[in-house]
Amino acid sequence: MSELPGLVITGVSGRMGRMLVRIVGESGKARLVAGLEREGHPWIGRDLGECLGGPALGVPVTDDPVGAFAGAQGVIDFTTPAATVEFAALAAQARAVHVIGTTGLDPDDLARIAAAARHAVIVRAGNMSLGVNLLVRLTQKVAQALDADWDVEIVEAHHRMKVDAPSGTALMLGEAAALGRGVTLDEARVSGRDGVTGARERGTIGFSAIRGGDMVGEHDVIFAADGERVVLRHIATDRAIFARGALRAALWGQGRKPGQYDMMDVLGL
Image 1 (cartoon, rainbow, N blue to C red):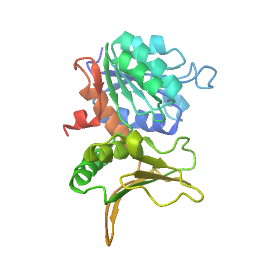
Image 2 (tube, helix red, strand yellow; image 1 turned 45 degrees about the vertical axis):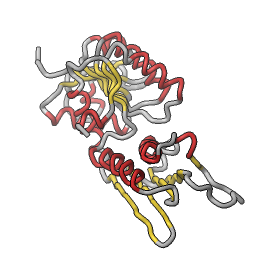
Image 3 (cartoon, rainbow, N blue to C red; image 1 turned 90 degrees about the vertical axis):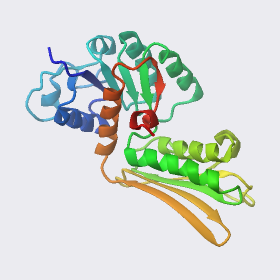
C-alpha cells in the first residue's frame, strides 16, 4: 500500500474534476483512490482513466460516497451546495480531510459544514489560488488605510456557465474590505444596481458580475475617491491554479486537529 494520501475527487467528469485528476496524477504527492459522480452518470462503474480517454488508472468511478470516502484520507470537492453539505458529513465520519471549493453556500449550508468540522478537518475557500488569497489580504489592508470617503467596488468576470453571482472570490474580497472597515459585509453590501437607484450611500461595498465566453476568473477591487482611484486586480488564465491550491490544502490538512480552516491557514498568511 502506498504511503501517499489517498484522495477522492467529487464531480470528477466536470472541468475542475478533470483538472484535479491531472494535477494530482502529476504531483507525485498523492494518489487517486476514486472518482465520484452522481447516480446514473454514464461513467459509473468504469475506470477513470478510460473515461478520460487515456489508459486505465485502476481508479473506479462510483456514485457511492460512503464506500469511496472510507478508503481515502482526503476529499476534494468542487460541486454544488446540496452535494457538498452531504459530503461534509460523510467525510467527517471517515475522518478524511474535506477540501471545499464549492461556492454559493447559504447560511444553513455553512452551519452544517461547521458541524462536520467538529469531527474532521475542513478547508473551505471561495478561491484556492495563492494570488487571490494575497489579493484578499491586500484588500483588507487597503480598506484599513482608507476611510469611508473611498467607495469600494468589486467587479468580477467569469465564463458563461458559472451559475452563482457574485462569485465566491468576490464575496471573499468583500468580506476582507468590510473587515478592514470594521463593519460586516451584510451591513455594507450593495449588489445588482438597476434603474434609478439614487446616489451611492457612503461606506457601501458594491458588486458587479460579468458572465461570458470562457473567462476563467477576473477580479478587480476598486477604491474610488474624488480625483483618484486605487485598483487591485487578479486575473486567472488557467484553472490549474485552483487545482494546485486544492491539492496543497488536502496535503496540508493531513494530521491537523479537527476544525474549519481556509487558504490563509494553508498558505501561512
